[in-house]
Structures are given as structure tokens and as C-alpha cells.
Image 1 (cartoon, rainbow over the protein chains, first blue to last red):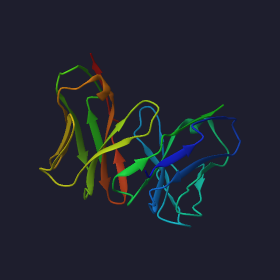
Image 2 (image 1 turned 30 degrees about the vertical axis):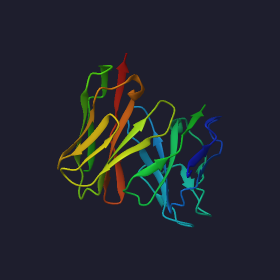
Image 3 (image 1 turned 120 degrees about the horizontal axis):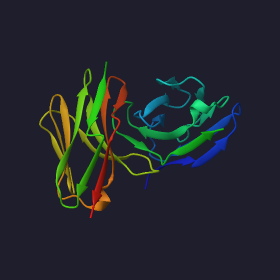
Image 4 (image 1 turned 90 degrees about the vertical axis):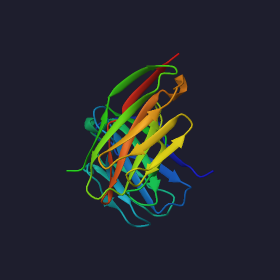
Length: 112
Length: 108
């Protein structure tokens, strides 16, 4: 069965460190997305990609970057982790940006 | 501004007690209305897509309906395993707009 997997599931890091969260999908979707989920907020879009070598900023992209070198993977990098980036991060993929998306299990990131 | 509002924030039901969750939306050029289920510590799980007013979708004890301004998720004779957060998501122009969710707890 097709799936989308994230790693690690949990991560604790120190302020100022660079952190990369992995996302791998076997749906063969061109479109992949990164969201963060915080108490009191719905899911918020960080970055998205329409295909290989394409990346776009979402509504909360400051401090984050992504790269897309193949169809299956969209790693999310926090250039210099800040406490405000403590959150649960979800990767998703789908046919289009505004249609149903399929989500990974999430990565809980704590920045201390 | 595009917006999705879900109510109530939390709902407690007895097993077998049917109820409905509400999702109000204001989205320019709605491309679709989606319902997801999210269990603690997991990613959202896709349930339904609705495209036009009057459309209905069913899955086991869940039925989703859509009007021009609202969507409802009806839960008939719920069981404890239906306990989860239910997310309403609207497809707007080139983006998804997420509601904050309704936390449903079904007690035996």
C-alpha cells in the first residue's frame, strides 16, 4: 500500500542547531507539503512543492527551508532552531494543493 | 478572508447518542470540502470529500453533508472507538484552509 512516512517521530534539539526532518511518500504524488500543528491553531502551511526542483513558501515559512531532488522526498530544514519552532510537524502529499491530502504520522520537535 | 470555523470545540457523547459536528466556511471559489479524523499522536486521516451543495457521503456511522455555507458531520450511534478530533478543511484557491477541529469523546 502507498504511504507517507516521517522520521524521526520525536526530536529534541538545542536552540541554534540545524535540524532536518525527513518525509518520504510512495503515492507518486507530484505535490508535497509541510505543515505545523500547534494548540490553538489549525494546521499551518510551511512550504510546499509541485514537483522535482520546485519549492514554494507557505504562510509560516520563516526559519524553514525545503529541497526537492526527487518525487518521493521533501526534507524540511530548520536553519537555526528556535523555541518558537517547538511543534508537531506533518508532511503530506496530494494531487493538488487544494484537494484532499494524505498525511504522515508527524514529528514532534522540541527546541530547548 | 478565507475561514473555516468548527463547532463545538469539544463534544462528549454517551455510546449510542447520535449528534452532529458543524463546520462553517467562507471561502472564495470553494474547490472542495474535506473531513479528516485525527487520533492523538497521529496524522490526520482522510474521510470524505464533498464538492457541491446537497452532496452527501457516508462511511460506517459517519455521514457528511454540504450546504453553500456549512458542512455537517453526523455521527449515528457512536462507539468509543469514534473518539477523535475531527477536522474540517476547505479547498480554496491554491490552498487548504483548516478548521481547528472538534474533539469528540464517546463514553461507554
